[in-house]
Image (cartoon, rainbow, N blue to C red):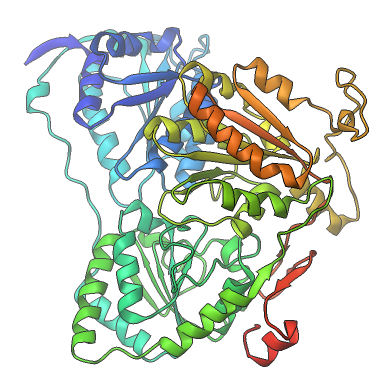
Length: 598
């Protein structure tokens, strides 16, 4: 046993739990923890410019690699409340992050002391556990419990609130005998797996819906092996995109109302059986259950018992960690294949592949101002196969989901359910901090970009290079498009006559904010593109600048102000708005005659 301050015990526990990186903003109430961090020098710290930014950096760090847990630190009062959005985003997407806040001394709680807020109560709805540690001797065990809960069952965030006097108190603690608690993960039984495969065997047009739980469980290789053993095509969810490479023969496309492929929706509508693993049946994927479920049998495998039947009741529900279930699925499928019990799915898989080959949206536009579809076409050409894309919400993200190519797990980093504006920039910095060698590319619209743009200075200060593709239409594009249903275009225009931008034939002055000037002022590099033929060279130059200067590089691409991106109210009622790039020699009629349309 050794005598130490409780704050030091917390740092020692984090070391034992594998933490090497933290993000945060110091303040008076959390300074004892920072003093311990400084003394140990074992956990690197990146200073955010906004505490919400620190929480999103922690999210990006966690999402970047299997086993990571991002840590974000703030002081009392607004230090905690500013991180609520990050906690909500992490909770919604099953992402473990540890949020640590300072707090007023225990004697000052509930007395309206300066910056003393009940962050424990505020954060409870968006965490797996939220706790104000009221006894110094409990502090190291609170951290132990936090890591246990973050890793067990459905992953998620935890908040620990540390009163100043608790951090400063002297306690007896033996770190040498400390061990992390065993992680609990429910596991499927062989009987359940055999039942699911029996149901699969009775179908003619089966699909696997692969969710983000497979990525969380680091089980993507098992999913691909199961698909290849059975010959069943795979539909990844938005959070599961990258589980199977986009160019894999059994990758059948994404399904949904927005971030979906035409061929993915058509294949789902043609199917008769769906095995969902590690997914939530999110409404932007399904649309209404009446359309999504009609004519189909469902098996749902999820680590969280309360997810089974939450959106619709499956024909068979299995509570299991995705990796544990997939290990049994692969074992059972191997045995059935060896004994000749697996049905030949080659004809169905071929038809799915034909949809994928023929049913595309047009991307090659030469318009000036630039159409957004062209941007993603050029991005696919410009960046390497293992690029990590970070995106958030809005038309830029929806178009990215429709047009980008993703080839591996954790190469699509997206806040799927919460969608807070400003998320992409700090999340990208967290991804770079986790793996500085990777090519990291963020994609945002101009309104999203302006929410937390001060975090670019963090990238400059701490040498966190990435490329930020900023598509600028000077609009809240997604809300403008949604307002079509109300026959209005109200309070969504970002354009104004910027008196500091010189008048020019391309009328950039009317786009409002001079993003290039702002980016340069924050210590980063910026390029502006106004013609589609210049996009490729700019993206290549941005990569070179990021590598040379080790700072974020923003490529602002001036778009036409109004473009409607394909979306709809049901998976069988997606409004395409723009031209269809039909690759069948007889056009859409040929697709219909071939039975490839829904």
